[in-house]
Length: 188
Image (cartoon, rainbow, N blue to C red):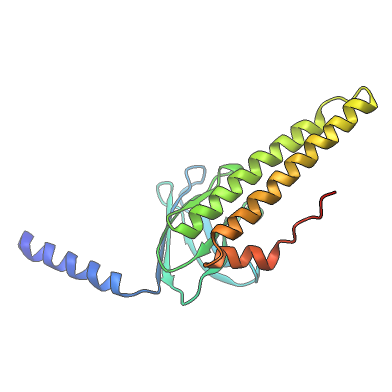
């Protein structure tokens, strides 16, 4: 086969794939895992329903298939189902980094998943500040009151991040998901 024929077939194949608007492809990185470890993909709303499974090879894994709706899903190692990374499964190319340390799990590749990851990063950083502030020693009531105000301020910032993400994504499934599932606290 000549290089010209090969290139023609490659381009033709790519065009056919690009015409299939309901195809998703997930490229995963799992450097903390061993070859042969099983990685699962499931719908978040139905934890008993697996979409598919795959195995780690050379620190990588892939999922591909078709979906006609954007759905919140989870990817996790079969032997550690509590170590999940959440993503919006949608017709597109998505990248996932799966780690033994949940705070290093990441998702990217689409507008929705990039915004989802940015929200998760912001909440994690603010949550770490809440924990750090809560663990500081308290010697008197003035210090205690100051700590309560700092934690309250951090909680307000978390809520603002969530609501801002919902506002910025009001026209897509991420915004709709937040609006359906998040109830902002009533701060005093």
